[in-house]
Length: 174
Image 1 (spheres, rainbow, N blue to C red):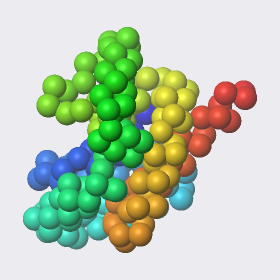
Image 2 (cartoon, one colour):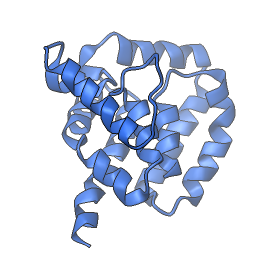
Image 3 (tube, rainbow, N blue to C red):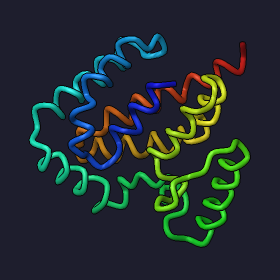
Image 4 (tube, rainbow, N blue to C red):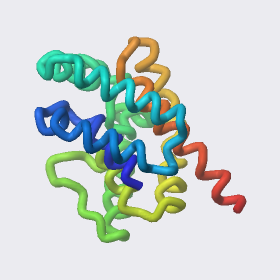
């Protein structure tokens, strides 16, 4: 599930290395048979936007979008619990779930950080990854709505992920 690794990279704080990797990411998306033509178009439009925008402007937009507006948080449990007490146990459970698959989350990031969630799902087989991601569909939907309301360039990326998570119930029926 290389597409999930690409999505994880695109949802990280923009760095020069990401800009340099865009041609390789385009190739991955072009060759991935699991990426629909619609999603390929969305991703290519984002690649074009990123390529045409100065890095400092992309970094400012990222901070403005994800770091300053709680409703746009890439920490998924925030959308479920806010800062309530239930969030801590959910984070512990998610960390333990990762460890049960031999996945060690990055020490300086919470386990519900969307790029980290995508990295974990990418290391699973396709069906397992989609079933795992199906558990966050509602959060992705709300995040996409929030980003669309703000007219964020990141909203279409979240919609791509949302469409990927909707494939999981169909796989369970096969």
